[in-house]
Length: 96
Image (tube, rainbow, N blue to C red; front, side):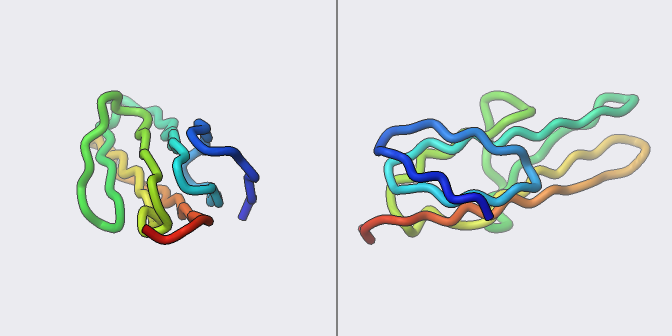
């Protein structure tokens, strides 16, 4: 797991399938690079619950406190099949 020492309100970019540790008050941008014909659709999950993303290939999470830690899943699907990548987000800081 990579540890990123950051100040508050920092944007961290991480690729789906990688783990990251951040401080509270950080925005995490998880990107999911997929390819296929037809173009796969991407579904995002946070701790096994579906979350909406403004852009299909990345998800931005606003990490406010340590309770926002968890697992983000990028699930890609098309007629040829499906695949998933998990990203574990560990949060360091004061509890809410």
